[in-house]
Length: 174
Image 1 (cartoon, rainbow, N blue to C red):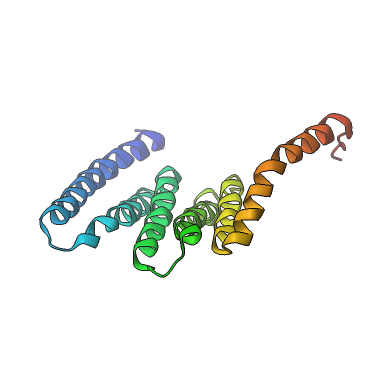
Image 2 (image 1 turned 135 degrees about the vertical axis):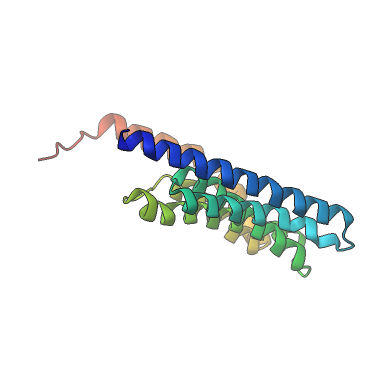
């Protein structure tokens, strides 16, 4: 039997076992949320799902599970923080969710170094944008004005990048 076939069979066993455990854990958490008197327990579903996907990715050695794991974990932590930080004024109330999601994308990039043995740069784009939006949300009215201005000006940035690609000659790699 070839090494590739053995590896695929091992992945299938690991996926089946972990998939079953994941369903049991999700079912128990949702059941507990439905019957427990704690109102805030439902907010733990997203971070728990995220951690399950992260564990699944580390357990099977596959980066594909790390991506939803980081996104769900970051988003879930942001939701939990939003629920626990009651002193935030209305413009900033969603900032922890946005910043948590940005952290999730950053986590994808960092864990990509471990799993892929190379830089995974694409998550830095949405993560950077979300991070900027989250920080501006925390700044209140000044940040909201900056977001409004950025919302108006960002198409100009696309035009400038497009013109650069069209008219600046590409350097040949030596």
